[in-house]
Length: 277
Image (cartoon, rainbow, N blue to C red):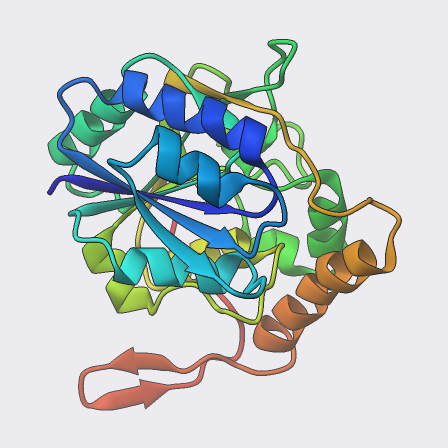
């Protein structure tokens, strides 16, 4: 199996159908499997999947386990050489799976891959090649972590390493809406940190990949349409708890406790974080 697509869903029945239909059309000759992990949806998602998509594997959780934990469940049940995490509110472009699979096969130095993302009106989404939304950019600036993300357009607007919309280039952060990673890398990194319930899981995994010396790339020769729907209202307590809680978890991991860097026969505890460039 070349590529395993994992979709974590919670109450996105209608949008999920669009995502799955686009997955079917974009695969072409790509050797793939699709696994949907449903986080206790209260709509008719499971009935719809059973009726309309019997060819896909479904893991039905009794409670909402959060995206990171559910994604790990789907990945553990998969067997592809590449793992693709896709949100249930995106539409893949024609031949997307085939194109990204071919690119990864041709570029063995690429460990993770993101693609060009468009909004519903066709506008380019900056998170495609910087990986971070505005609140996360502010967080990295305020905490001083921004200096470790040289390719993410966080501070210097004249940085020569900025990635343009149609430029295939190395980036720091992969966006969880479409996040392609080699299984060997995913296993070595240790999977998603399940403390990140809904937000920050993609940033954390990307950051750990960069700390370990792996390379993430932005590939604009295919695209997805990202509806960016919210699971919970933006100003609700649940949103505040999970969104800003993710930032607190991230800060506690990388600001207040130094990481252990493993070298054969040696354990190093560096004085500061450095990301391989």
